[in-house]
Length: 116
Length: 117
Image 1: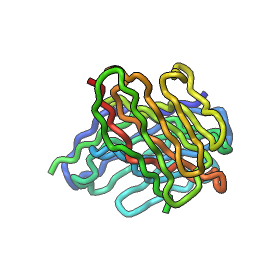
Image 2: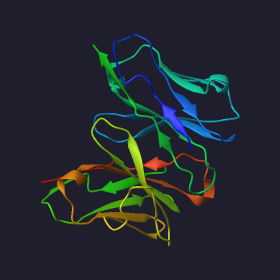
Image 3: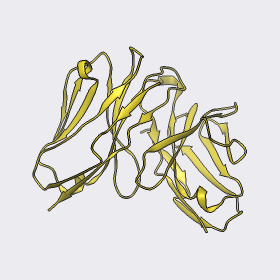
């Protein structure tokens, strides 16, 4: 079975602060994918990043950066210089089955509030 | 590219009504579609996986006769909530993926807010 744990439930920061969202996963598969999605108040899911288990390089995309560490089974997400528009629920997800029916297992989500 | 359209965006109906939600892939062929349910302030829970032309595979605890899924074409899957009751009120969201590249992320629709009175 696979599991995704997002221990933080709600985070509130002031604009321009940096914030890190934690994600810890469990899987027995050696090949898997990790994802982060953003869900703004309007409800749609916005894909942010996908990382496969063989690629431990950290990634930076603008104000977003991701730190993947297999040794600790973590895939943390940092927003630098946060903005009000970053306010949303952020989900970490894991897909460990390859093939057409691979399933996404979501964490419980972290509600981020960025105050002006 | 890879746009998934979900319709309707929201629906309010009386208890006992059956409600159909459509999920369409607009610019790619979706051999596999997934249906999720999300209660307020909770995570997305997979309800079922549907492959075009075959019966859907339901997750444990999801009633097949309650949530009818049809995936008759490569661009359309439907979820019908039969004889809906207030406890079925939720946010339903679909996602789709093409067989051509199963390692690409699922593309999500914008979701349907269902309220049963």
